[in-house]
Image (cartoon, rainbow, N blue to C red; front, side, top):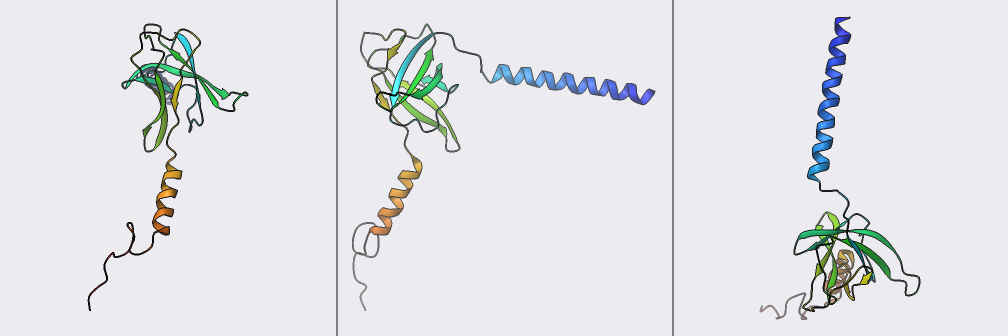
Length: 163
């Protein structure tokens, strides 16, 4: 009987500690939903960007990606973002998809322009830049090194060796 009481108390302590860590991680992860107004941007490629990813201006989170789908008219990826209501975005803003690190993770960076006209709810960001494809860049580098011949820049000796 005494053993089952100890096991019950220990189980309750484990449940309490795990609930504490769950609440702590939720609050520090800043995963609360963003309320605000929606903007859309069309990209030729999104490189792994997904709903829930951050939207940042100068490294500060100002919103989140709410939806990613295909625009059937031009076959571009349409990204819908929700921006905090106190943030006003100029109509000549550029949207860029960037990597958080080499290990992955994407976010959408907004670079505001100098216009005094602001985008309203449902506005479209006109200037977009898709992410760089690391595999393509690496492939181009490897094939450019393979195709270079001795005596050209990029490979081999440029001068004969004296004997």
